[in-house]
Image (cartoon, rainbow, N blue to C red):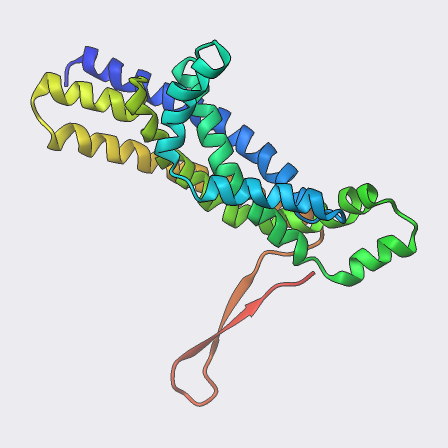
Length: 239
């Protein structure tokens, strides 16, 4: 490809990264707010949080982007630029999935920990901030990592708005070159590199958070099989 076409692809990469970061931040905020709300003692709060989750999990992200970009603006008399429309649609949609991760991780914390906070006369917010979240967040990282990769792939949907992301830029280059195999191979590799970098970062974050709460990473020790049939693997770790 010519330098000009590569420049177009790189601009698409930058747009995709911007969209990924902004929508991931919104999705993370929604995940924790809604996920914590689903564990609230008041049924109305749990009901509203659950209703939000079911609505956004049960609708198409592609249709949601259409709705935010084409339907929402006339209702309020203003127009969202594609970047913010994509951020809003993707953040709210993937935040609904993330809220289930938060709810599940909070529910998995040992009940004795919650009872200990009550015995210490902690308020619900103190129990959440000082006891539950520090133990639950490390367990959220692996599923959040998967969700982040899904969000990365979901950013390609914004190309339907004419937004110059990686997928849209790749299509323009394809039309210019009249060649599909080369450019789409490059696009696939770029998405893979971004996704691989994200998984490395999230894995490092998981290890750091687990170390902060006294959890050692799992270790595997290879030992000879006592009956002479090969080797055995012992999984180790500790708290």
